[in-house]
Length: 492
Image (cartoon, rainbow, N blue to C red; front, side, top):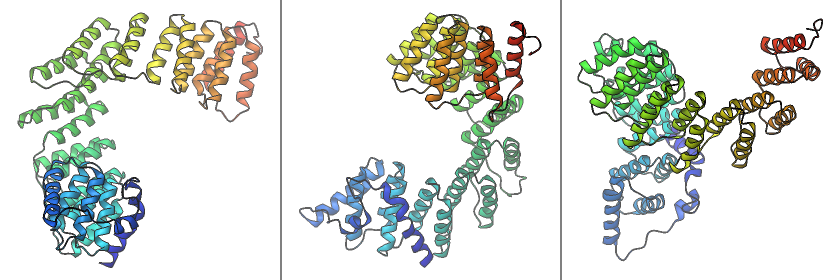
């Protein structure tokens, strides 16, 4: 019990920052705040009942109001049942006020208000959400010492906490321990572990676990029926890793179990098919998705648009974009960037410009990728002035160019023979703290050579060679080519 109390008290320092400054701003104020004043004790209790069983259960609570009623509750005689505190904490968790819940439970402990199973579980959940799974296990130990029997929710929460900290194998081992405690992992527990295994690129492990648990021959001695979330994770992994046939096999298995695919699963499969260039199958799956009444998301449309644009099929892409708008699916900045890039690829720079302008009217703000795509389009279409204007606009709006943005500009400036501006842009790049990469140096040396500045390219090369930068074969080849073409055969 002493260890449990000291752990909770130590959490004050971690949680204090989450208490609102303009409300209850310190632990001392929490202890000294005056009681809520009302006309009568009955009306106070009525207001509390309305707050707990009305606002808290709906999840629509104000943080200051929550602190106000919590203070009232801990000073009531008799103290309200612990279930009322549980309802309040649950509402705070729904609004992601994890630190505040930890702080309030610390106060309860200091006042010797004994938590119940539900409030301890809520505390474990909050600690895990704040990447403090170690403290979560301390509370778990206190929960066991109090004689409570842990349930699936407790173990699932700790497993998720371990996964969030990247401790996937520990989470897997803890799952075995869960069974030794007499708990049977449910579909949520397995789905949680599978989701994080997939995120950590353990696709093979996930597929083995799925097969064992579903068929009841696993080392966990547990059979579990998967749900749509479970299948969403295990189908996404193979799709990203290029195991398209395995993803299809799992998809058919899921349908055979009577589980209907959602937009996430359809989108995962479409993404995988597009990655391997199987456009016809991706299109068929999209049509099936529509026929099944599953609504495509922005991500679904973006995946399909990306494949069409990369293939230069802009007429089809534009028709799909119109369908997207008709169905009320809102394009995002990524969607617009895909369409702009596709139009630039086929030389429709004017259409790319219109899309860039229309982004704002659709509530999307251009980002560095959007700007870089249009700058690249201008450069490739010999509109260097427009490219430089757009570059200046980007900087004026506080959007920081990347090394890719600068590489695009340098290629365009050298191609247009504007060597002086290219040098100036290279200097600006360093003043903006953007580190050049091997592509930058290759572009710079190649650009100087192609604009009859071979001696400058040679000097730059020697400076680079004497630095810590590791030269690439492309950089050397550019200089050799420039030396040969300028007649410096021996030096080449």
